[in-house]
Length: 246
Image 1 (cartoon, rainbow, N blue to C red):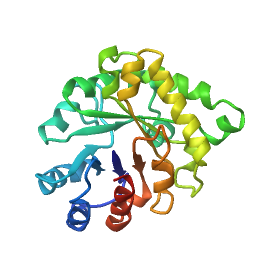
Image 2 (image 1 turned 180 degrees about the vertical axis):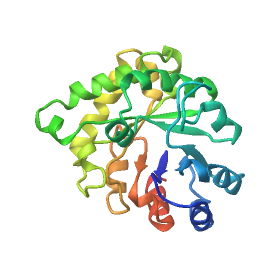
Image 3 (image 1 turned 90 degrees about the horizontal axis):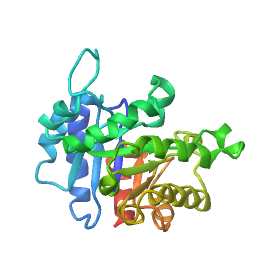
Image 4 (image 1 turned 90 degrees about the vertical axis):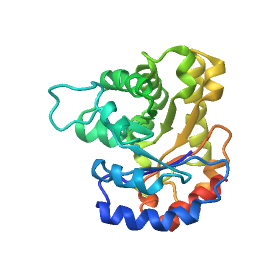
């Protein structure tokens, strides 16, 4: 899976221009699930423009409740009505800037799954946590909390994105050895509940993935794809990363 997280970028008009440039570039991407994650207001337009193509459309967040007094939020049924295919949950920016908690994610992940949305659960450590040697403690807490209410037989359906926070938007990238070690640990945490489900779990790397480092990162044993930020905003750049996964 190669997923492009557009964050707070692209109006509907800009998204339409982008998708027309992207679709022909990824039309032969065999064996790769290509995903774009636009802002809420561009979701319907992108679902319509990608119908019949290899590109799936996911949201960047959702609330755990199907409805209620939650001003400014969007629910799983609302996303499903648009034919959105999945949702990013627990991105580091949601955690750091907007106070998203592991307790909320404990509810959001199974809610997405039950609604038929593909969840991408994001986990990762800060620079201070890595420097203190707390990477494994942080990942253990986030993965165990995020998956706590997921039935064992459905664990393998969750996509987990490992994003070292110190490598997001900084230009720094985890070395292949650092990425592999962390992602193998994430898979081992799933295996603590079910080895068979852990083998099915797709683990993505997300931290300054670019065309010039994608092939090396995607070749790592425990890497099943990438969650791409800035490099996904340009159609040619994103298509190059998709090609590296093929």
